Amino acid sequence: MILGLPLFFLFSVYGVVNAYLPVLLSSLGYSVSEIGLLLGCFEAAGLSIPIFISSRVDKRGNHGQTVILLTILMIIVLPPLVLFQNFFLSALFLGLLAVGFKGTVPLVDAMISRNMGSDNTNYGKIRVMGSIGFVFITLLLQFSRLINPDSAASIAGAIIIPALLVILSIMFIPGLLTVVPRSSEKSSSIAETQEIAVVNPILAAVLFFRSLPARYITQFEKLSPAFWFGIFLIFLGFFALTPSQRFFSLYVRDFLGLESYAGLWALSAAAEIPFMFLSGYFIRKHGTEKLLVVSLAAITIRNLVYAVFPTFGGAVAGQLFHSVCFGLFHPAAVVFISERVPRRYLAVGLTLYTSFSMGLASVIGNVIGGFVIEFYGYRVLFTLFSFFPLIGIAAFFRFRNIIFKKKSIETIN
Image (cartoon, rainbow, N blue to C red; front, side, top):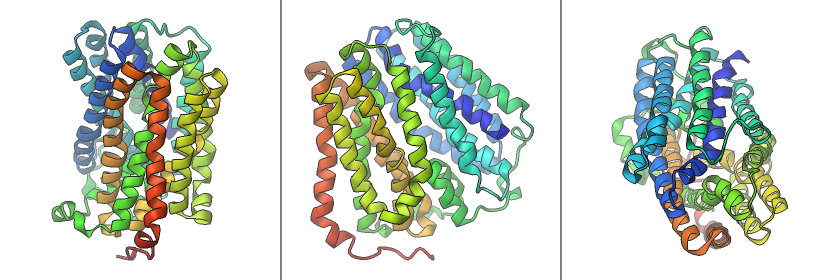
């Protein structure tokens, strides 16, 4: 379990950023619409650049060293982010923060997977240390006075401390700084890559990217209508999750008038863990298509709960829906993709999932969400975003007999 320490500290960073980044920007004096634009810049930078970093590092094998450099980037960009209160400078600094913030996770996963050797069956047990770290830091910040939510410097400091621990854990755990070039490693099997994909789709894309000829990347016509329809459904789901994923802390603080958002973030992270573990059982029993529809329905209900019950109890109930809205939705989405694309195109499918269905949906959702809050308020935000999963559900029942009438690919190739 010592291999899980970098994940524990890294997701402690994630806990602070997810709960407090919008609050940090608010403390700098930005309006909600400006915060939405800045978060859109953050998501866009974190969407594109880390993928290129990961593929290069995978070839060279210097995962540990690169994680340290990216973590240092996170640390050094925070002071100017706090000091220079200019919209365009803030967008630049947030972009740099996102490169370090989002670029580290696939590299840490690859680094740990590499150190485990050929046996990746216990990967999930190590990966859960990240979720534990997320829950730990958010509970700690909720029930202590380590952060002053009105001070951007205080929030930045809470990000820097666990980031430093990430660096120390990599430096002192044997083997994590060892450089292992791609040519000296055994190729990951397709089955292993698909198992890892359930936990981290970006990692699976990086591990499989090397086996794909470049010409395949542009051959999207090879992907079936069922795949593209699934990508569309998943996009609607993650788009509708934007209010609860990026604006939730501001909703609790500014609309509900509470300071309990860190604890509520911990609740949602804890709720996803059992469903993530049991996702394989649900997928085998009900199939990915039905689970995608159930997840879309849960996302709609979750948004409506926030809108209709603007109380602490409503916020608690909404956060508990994260169990299905992410803990089940994410694994079902990844397995759906792995079922619907040929194995030799797995990286293409997973990259489209992370870049389009997750990444682009978040970018657009942040920008639109900020303006909706600015002009209409939080209840309209959650109500509006609750309709998009319904579009996906209606489309599914309208076209499922056409699109899903037979298996679209043969997975043996």
